[in-house]
Length: 300
Image (tube, rainbow, N blue to C red; front, side, top):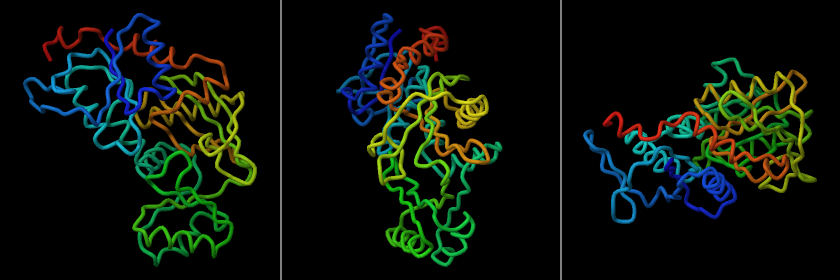
């Protein structure tokens, strides 16, 4: 098959591993910077141009689109979808997951447990917003934040009010979330492919921090997950329409709580910790679901 990998940096660990896995299985793969693409939005013959000429047909596309380029990156992915390419994750599913507020609302609608979460825009709502999530300590998150950036633990009511008001003064959209003390700075990252959790690790925050993200200095080790945790991870990914997802779960006294669903999970931490070839599993999924030459067969 001919595969396109959409990424701004082909030297990232995840991109290199996916390229290696594809090539080892006999596929042709090209890394394409989505911001360098431009499109002819033509109902008769939609085309993606790159480097001064139209790109040929790709059987499948692997989107590795960063949060900062979600808008344009998903537009490019949609164009590939219009051309008949199979997307490992669909553009609409990626946009659902990247909008933290929307994704939490969709998960809640499906009855998926999560930390109590509040969202508001008026400064007059601050005190009631704090009470809504059970008071301090609580967590304040930038809606556009990623990899632990823009996440603050407010340990007192006064600190919570100050942080919330400061973010609002910057016209930032924020979520205020219940702090799960019993998680003790740990979470479970479940790597979901299709209807299975293919790998799971427990991430632990560094000393003095509560954010377990590996980019923030957290550590990881293999972990056995329960059937309930496995089921909730698969359901969360399916709810957002993602075929590949990193689902982050907190272990609370009342059961597993979904904290976030990542549409472009990094492979380095989970492959290094588990020793599993996750990149190959992703390519195998494409092999089972893409239809080589689909565009030529249908004329679409």
